[in-house]
Length: 564
Figure 1 (cartoon, rainbow, N blue to C red):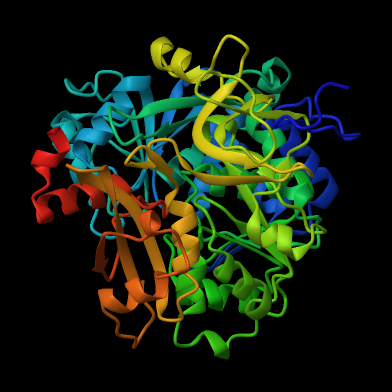
Figure 2: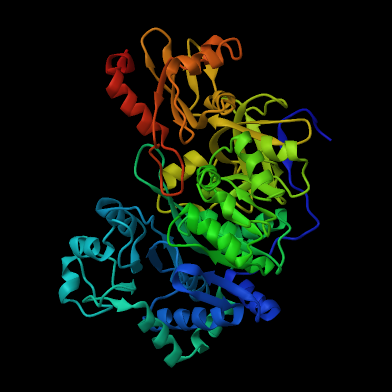
């Protein structure tokens, strides 16, 4: 049986993996639940059944094929959450096109890099969102569009791009309106889409998602039908989803959280996809849960905190909620308890993963004891393996910290056109090295204790920011806290805390330090404390500690210590 005290787990299951494409699974959903709600988009006043959605998906797929786009071609999508995103996701899968998710926050240099790195032939884009004038940026990168016929773009800086498809906004030269592609597909009919279906294979790449580390250019994680369809299914199964469920999805679609854990969990379980708005807004999310009687709610911890702290929170009836997922970054235990008690999410689950693994590797389940659901990231998902290894690559014992590695159907094909960085991430044994520090207990539950690069080494001792954050969350005045390391001439690194206080509270560094005194070891007490109103974040709500670190280095003039 091997050594039962070593940190290795494999997810056994009597449920087989789905051996079909996303398009075939979509057809099955329509056959099973055709008359039930599939998509509700509050901002667009849209409520479609699976049959309604199929009509639009097939029209759009046929329209794309009619533009002479071929299986394997890359088509970018650069847009906030809306119905067109969902149509595009399923239509590209049916047309065998590789959907390239482009972060709505990207600006010129990032857009240019993403489109050219993977050779996008087509781009579906919003006209504008918040402070982003998407059409203006495209015109800046490709001024040739003003004189081009739609579908005939030839731009010096974007040499592969031919087709620009616009969601909303005013008519713009060189572009097709989204509705025109739907109309085109309606006219040509769906014969080409149906003929393509049996030729598509589930191991075909279908999606590229850019993951930006803290250094270097973004990498295009290349995912297959098999990767993301199965992950969506098992993520939904952990929440015990069925066609009776309605998932409120305020997380971005360009990220796995929205398009896999949201949309593909829905298509495999018959649940409705409910979008509160283009981007996250705590009030719109609360209104949507109440109005649409959502049973499941997704979010990163900062989103749940924003809802719980909203001044109108107590006025909403959230009693329809049962389950949901909190993921994206470690969840404070105190926040988790409030979500269960005040948001009625007794069966909320915690998921852990990364884009390169489709994304989820471990998850708590609805019947796990509350103590497990508030303090771990659950157990291994079905059909996957996890091991925790030391810096030499040897599996560590239960309770010991090491790097979490995962293997199985969920591991990406690789980074697009980047064999070197793929080789750094996936070893010869097909293990994906996550860069996350974790522990595993005797019952197979995992805990993420930090990122390898976030770990602070003070005077030769490894300190894990997560542990100190969890302690400080207990302070009644603290709403949120982030711990990171800054350079120090004497110890190599020292701890810094950025603290967000709850509304209406006031505190100073002395109060925080006395709260720590005698409670945690002296080396874990932050040397520097700053009170802030917000943290630098990615669009998906991931806190960017490296930016905080750079700001403190400047403020404290620690450049010398950094190089010392």
